[in-house]
Image 1: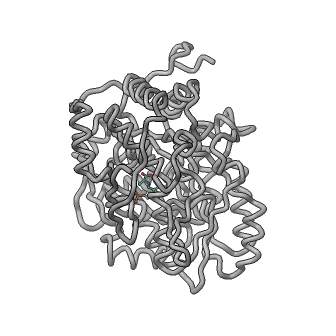
Image 2 (image 1 turned 180 degrees about the vertical axis):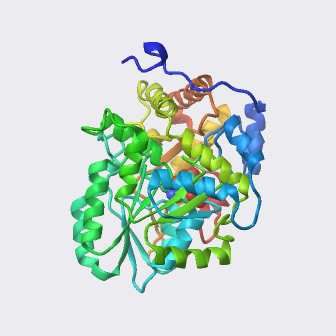
Length: 463
Ligand code: F0G
């Protein structure tokens, strides 16, 4: 097993801490008042009233000393900034794409790409489209179809590459929709499906099928390094290969990629769109100038481009990735050992609690995912996010009834290089305590909802 330094078993944080941010302790009574004032919605609680913030792994990474040094080096020239060329070189080295277009974050890259690819009745086929990806596709009147493998939607089913796309359904849908298919999108790792990896074999075959049908093959590459690490650890024939080489092969099958550098870019803001085709890139740059900025900064400051270039180098470090994936697995194992229902095996960036099973006595109309997330906050100041009926439930216009998403989850996303093992031990202790007394929890009812993305602003109250 020896995977730690010096042949020892213990895997350690491969960094030491030079700058710290104080955490603010609160009491349960204070948190009860704060949550009630926030309409029982954790999105409306102030971050300083949270002890351990696991709302997202996006934009929340700690930057390294080298990244902060890059911040000082940033060249803020409007056109042709030195920082752009450093960024471009790093993205090219990893992805092999000739055209690298910076954007302020991932969804801006998505919006530009889907605008260029849009056609009447357009369809995108993917493993599981992330919510901003789906929203940007649907906003243009196009359709996003999720084709996860059957194992991917059963929380407790073990599969090494649970993020894979179902190749048989992909082939059938490519044939069925024909010319209407604008692109095939593989999200690596598959965030909405539990941060689960996609295998190299699956990427290769999905790419072959897409290209055989004349469709563009796109990687949503937000967590490409974590995915590459899982391939190295789990896929046959990949054990001895380097992470960079695996990542390069993943990108070699793609015609284009969108990326949020707020994840595996180890940066607090940023993203890019990259592709081979010059004509596609020219159209994308025209849109970029309208909404993001000139093609050598695209909505970012020069210093952000430096931080991303350095972050992309650091994220490929095998010691970092071993620590990263191990710390999420460690968190899961502590909960799994005591019977907390989870998406298994552990994904790359988050623990996903199966709130439907955790609170199986609560009807889904009473938002068990929100109830659980809220209780983790009340009990221990931990903030996670419901991914279930509040986020994705839709009202059937004919019957007025709610159509529930397939799973009722609470995601506890782990920010990169931010929390230590004792923070994880504490969070696990809180979750186990809540699990032991789960039968005492009460449901919630909705008292206010907005027409779109209602989870951000909804207000609820205890039933
Ligand atoms: N694609 C995936 C797979 C994502 O997880 C995200 C963001 C995006 C695209 C959009 O990137 O935020 O830079 O615009 N996910 C965050 C999360 C918000 O919490 O999972 P962005």
